[in-house]
Length: 614
Image (cartoon, rainbow, N blue to C red):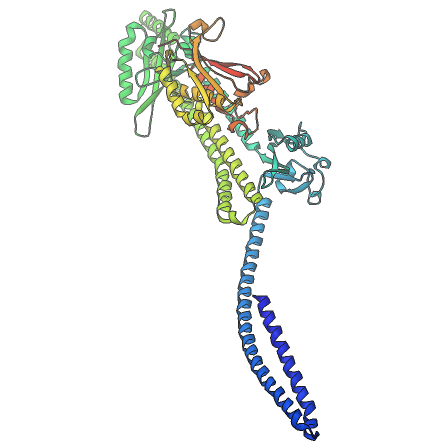
């Protein structure tokens, strides 16, 4: 359109110049016409010329009108260009603001990041990285090999080169010289085409998480030690009198060797026959009132002898007030009872007065009060431990939720203004925060795992495994996995939580398998030789696969919480707590878990539940 306007303008200008030339010609020849004797002929020529000039003048007027029309069109185009320019300037301002937002996000983020180009030179980094790598502003453009770091027992350059050459990701927890723990990840820098063009190194401060994890382990160990080695016999009873948990004092005082011989049985199996009616009446009173104080009971030892004890118990109820289980404590009253009998005989012999008897009774009341006080202290300790785990989990999750919210908000509101690299960085940040959130949830779930009471009952393993396989239907079908299941599983007395053990082992067998035809076998057999459970004829359950296998040196590592043998995104990802949960559930049943594996050929996980078939 612009070229057409230029052409019209040029044509009009040429016609105007021609018209001016003709006018000058008439002016020059006018005197000659008047003097020349042959002026008549010249006049005719002039008349002809003037006629041509008149015609040119009309053409010029037409051209002028076209030029005016063209000028109006050009003015309209100019207004459109002005509008487009205004919108362009607005877009520039928005992009500038967005770039400032990203720069500010880089400045305030607590996650250290270093971006390296294809030559492993520093392209960009966040200020938080200085805790791990000694970078300054003028280091941009320098090779990472020329820059020192504060990481202990880490060859950062070797990790970077391995990621650049192989494309595999590196992820590990490392410690700095400043006594901080960092979760270090090294990943390829991928272009929009998918080609690698450098490396990204990130450092997330997990010092507080490490401290919290250590504190939880220490607190749980202290609680377990206090519980198991208390001078009194502790146990929790369900609503029918079944023993769901007990301490080692209960086991030892009744002459047994392990908790497995106690848990799952009724408390009435440990009551002397001559005291059984009183014990049942006391339990019914407890179910009605939720409290038992200083109840004298006669406990039956394994050899048939009797342990005189004083029972104090309190109820644990749900939010609706329904009785869940009891906190019961028995204090050995044998010596006290013997002493009381001796004192009574002595009083009978010496005819002691009533005041002495009241004094002895007061001692017994104080003894019972002391027992109650210790029970209350133990209850408070349990509650404090639960509160600590809940608060620690909540305080860790709040900042993670804030980071994920704002990153998601940036993707939703400004995602179309970012390039692919910017969106990928924000999406990576959202994934990492979500992974951290899942780890906190897993840590909290793990802290609670040892405190739930087993609801042991007869469970048909055939039905339990069928439900687990049905729940994994999509994963099995999408991975083209063949599963062979034995159909003669025994019925076992256990908690339904054993389903999580099967689910974790089958899921891992699917995930850690690089074969085109994945094969999983689920079965059982009697314990053999010196295997765990052989002395009790407990069945050995197993899950066998033809996957990638596990090195012998890693047999114990895989059961550590948050321990993964592969990078986070390899073999389906995960938080590294599945096998830890499985082992804890099995140990709560008094069983064991172990494995046999050949690298490249497959792995077989075995476990027992320390129970004979129901």
